[in-house]
Amino acid sequence: MKNNLDIVLGLLAIAGMFASTIWKLAVVKAQLEKEIDTVKDDLRIHLTEYSGKKEFLDYHLHSLNEKIDHKFNRCWSEIRQNQSYLAKHGFVPREQSDL
Image 1 (cartoon, rainbow, N blue to C red):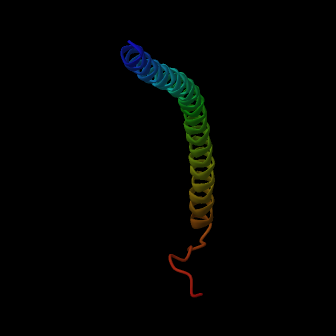
Image 2: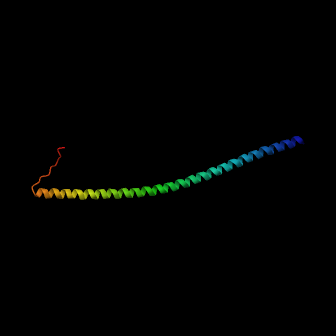
Image 3: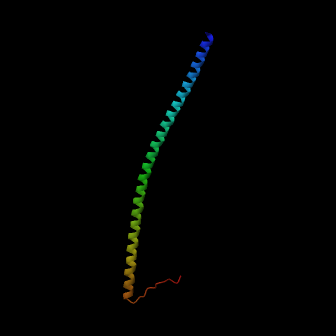
């Protein structure tokens, strides 16, 4: 009888350790999944912020390019007007510089 009781208690102890190990693994797995979800949420927030900043920067750069083009066109127009005015008064502008 004592041998049977020892075997049953031994099997119960092994089953208890096995169940405890499974429980610990389940807890660790749950913690890992929770942390992965947290990282995913942080990544989504970061990507949203990045997208907004990138869009702002694209608009800003586009507006700067438009300003530069506008200033260049105005300057080029004034140069052409000055050349035509000087040409009417006998000045011949050089096409190339001798530098």
